[in-house]
Every structure is written in C-alpha cells, then in structure tokens.
Length: 89
Image (cartoon, rainbow, N blue to C red; front, side, top):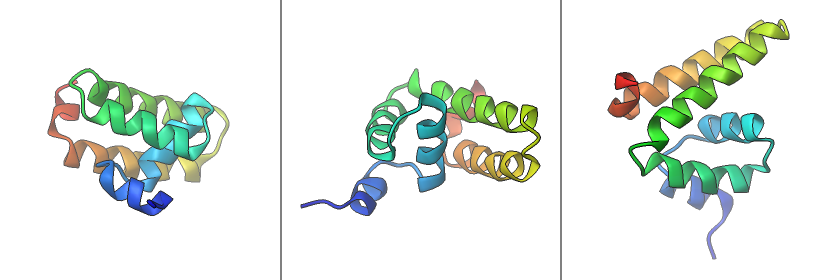
C-alpha cells in the first residue's frame, strides 16, 4: 500500500506545492495531491498550478502574512525551475 509520502514522490510536485493547491482549492492534502498530479501532467495544468501559487501569494500579502508570502515565492521559484513550461505562461 502506498503512503502519502510515496504519492508525493510519484506526483512530480513538492509537499509545499501540494499544500499551495490544497489552500487555494480548499481541499484536503490528499485530494490536492491527486488534483496536482493530474494538472502537472497536462499542458494546461502547468500554468494553472503557477496561477494557484500566485493567487496564494497575493492572498498572503492581502492578509499581511509576509512570511507566508515569502515562503510561497520560494515555492513558485522551485515550481518554475522544475517545470520549464511554467516560465512560458
């Protein structure tokens, strides 16, 4: 049986990227992992994940959660670095 960490490793996403999807979509982390895994393997999904992270950064800024915004910027940088199609959108 696969555990959560096994699923993360198979998804081509980091735990932080999955957490960003969960926060944005108001989903449990396992459901966000499934959604993210689907999206990251489609051409349309890469820019969607990037937009999700950008939305989360903006939400953190609006709420004056500067530390969270900075952490999400690092998540975004890693996502763009590891998914070259994200840089195009």
